[in-house]
Length: 249
View 1: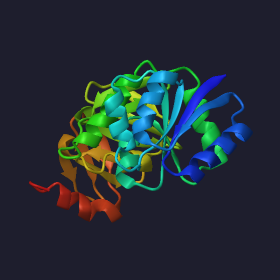
View 2: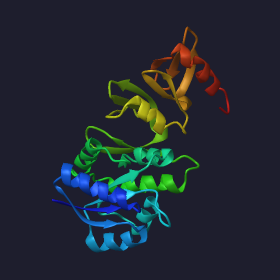
View 3: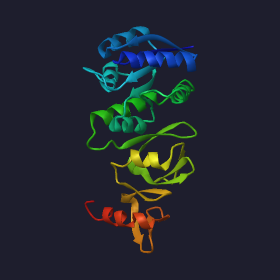
View 4: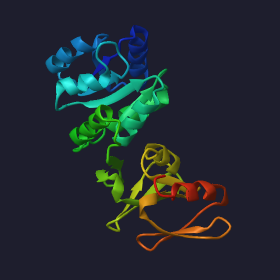
């Protein structure tokens, strides 16, 4: 059995999650429900839960600030949130799990299955990456956590040359000639990297503009990357590409 704790200032939301867990995740036992983030800090230290469902938007102390107060974590965490574009992007960037409210039973089972499988040895690094992104939205955080087939890998964003799609997977091509296969769509990766110097130039390619060495004209044209690879550019994305390649763009 997995001992879990729910932290959410909305009573109805926490009770709804308790009901869903009982019905869909019988291996999870909720040992405490806390509607006050400040009290939750003491309860976590006292009860030492294995899994925490943590709301992000709470009065006085939000979920990220609560984690900062705790210091190094010894539990897995699934964030719960209403739609918050920045918070969700930060969580994705750190390869952590989240659930949108109202919680979908299937998404709950998937998230619990991920965190209750083999515990990531990089969990503390993931948390640190998340908190650094939350604390300093500008300038952009320069590392990203990638859940690969072998495990979790945290890499510098500027080590990414380009990404290519392969069905529901994305292949990262790095400056050291390494390739990483990630079980996320190219669209998800595009959203995660949009504040960096990346551009979707084709339905199959997302490129690091700083690694482009030449643009070859044509109907859409093509790009020569720093590793010698040639990337096709779709006609519909050509104008935006040429604009972004200009100095200062």
